[in-house]
Image: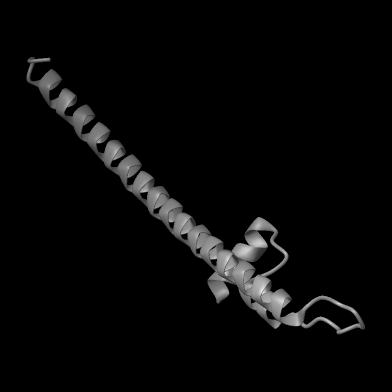
Length: 96
Protein backbone atom coordinates (compact mmCIF):
# COMPACT_ATOMS: atom_id res chain seq x y z
CA UNK A 1 0.00 0.00 0.00
CA UNK A 2 2.98 2.37 0.48
CA UNK A 3 3.52 2.38 -3.28
CA UNK A 4 -0.09 3.52 -3.74
CA UNK A 5 0.38 6.21 -1.09
CA UNK A 6 3.45 7.56 -2.92
CA UNK A 7 1.52 7.57 -6.19
CA UNK A 8 -1.29 9.43 -4.43
CA UNK A 9 1.16 12.09 -3.29
CA UNK A 10 3.10 12.22 -6.58
CA UNK A 11 0.03 12.77 -8.73
CA UNK A 12 -1.90 14.87 -6.23
CA UNK A 13 -4.75 12.38 -5.89
CA UNK A 14 -7.20 12.84 -3.04
CA UNK A 15 -7.94 9.20 -2.33
CA UNK A 16 -6.56 5.70 -2.32
CA UNK A 17 -8.80 2.68 -2.92
CA UNK A 18 -8.69 2.06 0.83
CA UNK A 19 -9.78 5.65 1.55
CA UNK A 20 -12.83 5.14 -0.66
CA UNK A 21 -13.57 1.75 0.89
CA UNK A 22 -13.41 3.09 4.44
CA UNK A 23 -15.52 6.22 3.80
CA UNK A 24 -18.69 6.27 5.92
CA UNK A 25 -21.70 8.40 5.04
CA UNK A 26 -24.40 9.53 7.41
CA UNK A 27 -27.91 8.22 6.83
CA UNK A 28 -30.71 10.74 6.50
CA UNK A 29 -34.39 10.39 5.98
CA UNK A 30 -35.23 9.80 2.32
CA UNK A 31 -31.54 9.51 1.46
CA UNK A 32 -29.91 7.39 -1.21
CA UNK A 33 -30.20 3.61 -1.31
CA UNK A 34 -27.25 2.46 0.82
CA UNK A 35 -26.75 -0.79 -1.15
CA UNK A 36 -26.76 1.07 -4.46
CA UNK A 37 -24.20 3.59 -3.17
CA UNK A 38 -22.00 0.78 -1.78
CA UNK A 39 -22.17 -1.08 -5.10
CA UNK A 40 -21.18 2.06 -7.00
CA UNK A 41 -18.32 2.80 -4.61
CA UNK A 42 -17.09 -0.79 -5.02
CA UNK A 43 -16.85 -0.20 -8.79
CA UNK A 44 -14.95 3.05 -8.20
CA UNK A 45 -12.56 1.26 -5.84
CA UNK A 46 -11.84 -1.40 -8.49
CA UNK A 47 -11.14 1.29 -11.09
CA UNK A 48 -8.91 3.16 -8.65
CA UNK A 49 -6.98 -0.02 -7.86
CA UNK A 50 -6.42 -0.64 -11.59
CA UNK A 51 -5.26 2.94 -12.12
CA UNK A 52 -2.98 2.82 -9.08
CA UNK A 53 -1.43 -0.43 -10.29
CA UNK A 54 -0.95 1.04 -13.78
CA UNK A 55 0.70 4.15 -12.31
CA UNK A 56 3.05 1.94 -10.29
CA UNK A 57 3.85 -0.15 -13.38
CA UNK A 58 4.58 2.93 -15.49
CA UNK A 59 6.71 4.43 -12.74
CA UNK A 60 8.72 1.19 -12.54
CA UNK A 61 9.15 1.16 -16.32
CA UNK A 62 10.35 4.75 -16.21
CA UNK A 63 12.87 3.87 -13.49
CA UNK A 64 14.14 0.93 -15.56
CA UNK A 65 14.38 3.19 -18.62
CA UNK A 66 16.28 5.81 -16.64
CA UNK A 67 18.71 3.16 -15.37
CA UNK A 68 19.15 1.78 -18.89
CA UNK A 69 19.85 5.28 -20.20
CA UNK A 70 22.52 5.77 -17.52
CA UNK A 71 24.18 2.46 -18.50
CA UNK A 72 24.02 3.37 -22.20
CA UNK A 73 25.54 6.78 -21.49
CA UNK A 74 28.32 5.12 -19.48
CA UNK A 75 28.97 2.59 -22.25
CA UNK A 76 29.13 5.40 -24.82
CA UNK A 77 31.63 7.33 -22.72
CA UNK A 78 33.74 4.22 -22.27
CA UNK A 79 33.66 3.47 -26.00
CA UNK A 80 34.53 7.07 -26.85
CA UNK A 81 37.56 6.93 -24.54
CA UNK A 82 38.69 3.68 -26.17
CA UNK A 83 38.37 5.23 -29.67
CA UNK A 84 40.45 8.23 -28.57
CA UNK A 85 43.14 5.90 -27.16
CA UNK A 86 43.11 3.87 -30.38
CA UNK A 87 43.44 7.02 -32.49
CA UNK A 88 46.42 8.05 -30.34
CA UNK A 89 48.05 4.68 -30.82
CA UNK A 90 47.45 4.84 -34.59
CA UNK A 91 48.85 8.38 -34.74
CA UNK A 92 51.98 7.33 -32.88
CA UNK A 93 52.38 4.41 -35.24
CA UNK A 94 51.98 6.77 -38.21
CA UNK A 95 48.91 4.92 -39.50
CA UNK A 96 46.23 7.51 -38.75
